[in-house]
Image 1 (tube, rainbow, N blue to C red):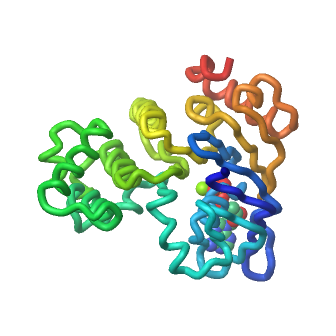
Image 2 (cartoon, rainbow, N blue to C red; image 1 turned 45 degrees about the vertical axis):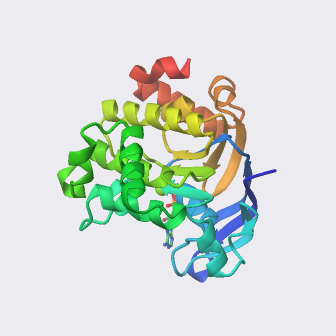
Length: 265
Ligand SMILES: Nc1ncnc2c1ncn2[C@@H]1O[C@H](COP(=O)(O)OP(=O)(O)O)[C@@H](O)[C@H]1O
Ligand SMILES: [Mg+2]
């Protein structure tokens, strides 16, 4: 059974401007699906529509089923039940997911308490296990730190720990490493790769960067101006891009990112 099915999703802005146009794709249990395209191609809006969280003023049509729930038409109460539990999200800027006034430990404890019903020592242990899992050593200190006391990489690890603490079946990662230094970026990609493998979590990975996609995604959809122009396993997209736009992406990745050439050859 498909975990996520997006069929003919279109998103329009005020005055009917087309932002996403007839997008269809599926993510099955344990899949690693990529959405790739340049800035403004509709990647984030697609992921927000999947979570039923489009900004006010935008309208979605088509069909989005996440864990069997209609994320466009179902009552808000049903859609809320899906968020965090069936699918969780990690964004480019971890600060958007983190409450500046809450310690890292309390932020992770919140969903664990809510979704897994843990209290007291069991809750504390679960929080420390979650921090351990994202390779944050010195868990006692990190758990007691506020977001501004952590580095960008540490914050993204906390955000990943929060997203995975409730064992969602799908993790949606929207440019999760774009704001980070290249070395930290590689560490976070390795971490995501390991965690989704360990837990059998499906991954919908969104990026503008072909070399980044090459590290973690399999079946990948190329978005251009709100439309999917090509879908194929990432290795095929790189070796035999069929659409001219994909060819442009591959060429510029090769040209500007020689250090990442090994992922592209
Ligand atoms: N809240 C909004 N209202 C109107 N237009 C928006 C809104 N959010 C995004 N857009 C527009 O929709 C298009 C797709 O945006 P987005 O999905 O954020 O692109 P990506 O994530 O691929 O960079 C862009 O042209 C963007 O300007
Ligand atoms: Mg985006």
